[in-house]
Amino acid sequence: MIWADLAERVLGKDRRALARAISWVEDGQEGCLDLLRALYPHTGKAHIVGVTGSPGVGKSTMVDALAVLYRAAGSTLGIIAVDPTSPLTGGALLGDRIRMNRHGTDPGVFIRSLASRGRLGGLSRATGDVISLMEAFGLDVIVVETVGSGQAEVDIMRYAHTVVVITAPGLGDEIQVLKAGTMEIGDIFVVNKADRAGADRTVNEIRSLWKGHTQDGWVPPVYPVVARDGQGVQEVYQGVLDHRRYLVEEGGLAARVTRGLETQVREILEETVVDYMLGKAREQGLLQELLEEVAGRRLDPHGAVARLCDRYGWQRLKPD
Ligand code: GDP
Image (cartoon, rainbow, N blue to C red; front, side):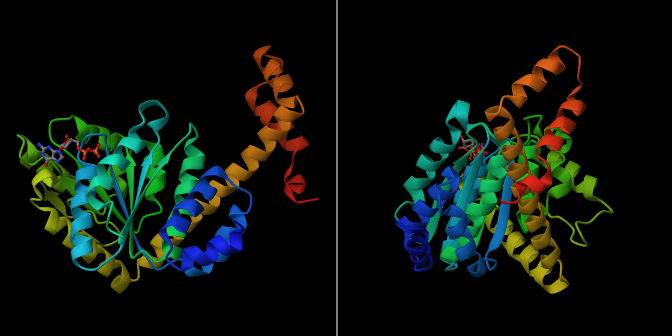
């Protein structure tokens, strides 16, 4: 199939075409840049919601429960489960299987996992592209769920307009969340597994951390939730809608959108430049040569990069 046909079918709300378009983008298939360019004018309308937290805190359970509420309100939903750890664990596939059981037959929900295949930068870039494809398809809300809470996840959350940070008591997770800088990016905090001891303390800890601070004027709410039983999920759902309304009414949405676009442009630039230089250097044997010099302490790593830049400077990135 050629990209123009595929674009047409994605815009015509053909689910199989969307699935195919995502695979094209993931695989870097020929024509995928034409496809993305053709669909781009049709993007920019969805509410992008990020959900992050360490493995096991209950993200999938929470997203499932939120999806039910969105569907009840008539909104269509895309769910992107981003799993940087999956080359080893197969985690993304597992997540897919669990969720498909619940929403698999619902044409208003589209679920896709993205695995790193060992490259975090590429994964973040792919996430931006998949969001665009889902927006062009016409989904109202796109939930980007990241497994883990490292720097890569924080980067991916920059695509979101509203970021939900999930933690759970008794995992020592509160500290992990703080370390990775996740606390700073949250608009809404969920203390899941509130059926367990220590939940109140965690809720209070997060509230006191935010005392006197706001997220661009928005005071991040902290909700105790038992996602497994649906307890407190309605409040989180309402909180997400309130935050969206706040962004629209107070004019903060544009800044969030720009933040996402800047991330996307940076990701693409890094991938383009780094891939180009390393690819060429490897192909022409220069990389090996430089690494040998560095290993022999005749050249330092900065010097190696300077040599790469000399050889493959920005002028050479232009198509010739
Ligand atoms: P994720 O890795 O963050 O996506 O976490 P999951 O949604 O897969 O949940 C991890 C485990 O926690 C599963 O066994 C869930 O059934 C369980 N779980 C989810 N929510 C709750 C909750 O509110 N209370 C308790 N006790 N367990 C929960």
